[in-house]
Length: 167
Image 1 (cartoon, rainbow, N blue to C red):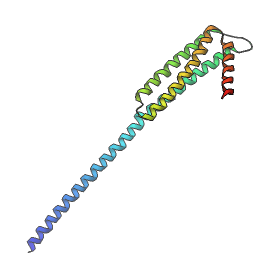
Image 2 (cartoon, rainbow, N blue to C red; image 1 turned 120 degrees about the vertical axis):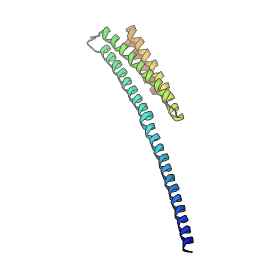
Image 3 (cartoon, helix red, strand yellow; image 1 turned 180 degrees about the horizontal axis):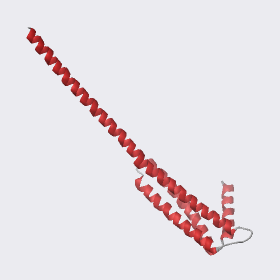
Image 4 (cartoon, one colour; image 1 turned 60 degrees about the vertical axis):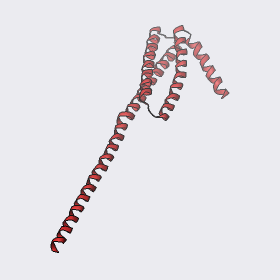
């Protein structure tokens, strides 16, 4: 009788040991899956989102350089002293074209790595707005090259003012 109880106790201990082992393996497996999920989120944050933020900041920086060059051209052409250097204007136009090309390349790269539907919608809005801005830039560059910048900018400002009054 005493032997039978030992067998029952030892079989119960083996059963409890196997159950605990399966439980520990399950906990380790769940922990591994959770760790993999956290790793994937960190990877998305640093690899995907960081790259996009870096591209957007670069586009912003190049856009500011374009605006600075246009501003410098407008200031140089509208001074009361009429101190105008055609070579400086040409240099600024070349800088503008270089920065514009960098912006377009970075926007193409951003288009390639954008995966979400919402991101693609926002990028389309930005691209459409930028294309309208490029039309204005082309207009100003044409006026710079033709030497009619002062007259053209005055007409452009009048058109913008009329447009705002209509809105």
